[in-house]
Image 1: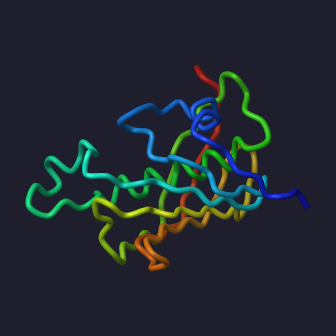
Image 2: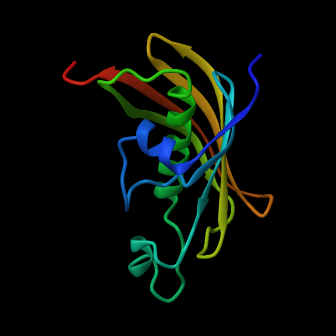
Length: 149
């Protein structure tokens, strides 16, 4: 069993192709390769989506919470090794539930647990919490492919 480690934003930028405003993980708090990861996103009023979702009551869109969870899962997938030409695709989602709105000023704590991996297809159980309360959960499937394949 490996010792849990943390990853800062500089390493996240090396592992994920996403950039502002679509990079939705600020820091990895703990990662145990091939098992689980805990990451965070500081949700601020400066997020571009708050201008339209919704101007009088800003709420982080559920699809972006799921995207943040998928990025967290990608970091778990790439925690040991990432091929230079590897592309990470969001391939499926099951059982998504949204339990609590995510608002400006919240700190979104995201977890992903690897349930299984076979032939470059990864299945995860993911959860997002705010102040210890469940905000969203789902089971997601992601695939790693080679660019151009």
